[in-house]
Image 1: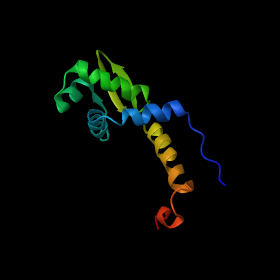
Image 2: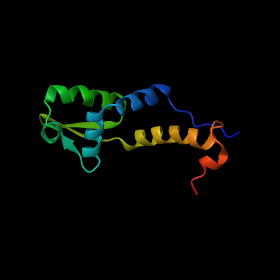
Image 3: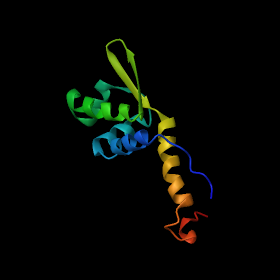
Image 4: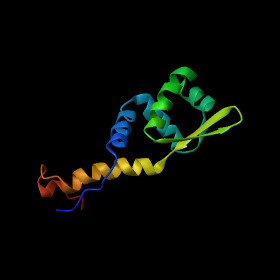
Length: 108
């Protein structure tokens, strides 16, 4: 049986937790196209900076976002390698799961 890819379970747990909130998903969708500062995210999502900060913190702790400071503003962008970690974690279930019959696992 092939060996599963080793991942840090804390990153997987925090990653899926971060993805469980609708506002956080909206943040990720906005950042899919470009880096944005907090002020742009607040405006696009029509939320206060204090509310958004809570959600950005969860996304950063899950390492799904990168942040960089420029002057007084913080700019956020996606940390794509962490999305790959979560994707690979799920792929292991699809590929090696004995729960599903083999014919259901085929994508071709």
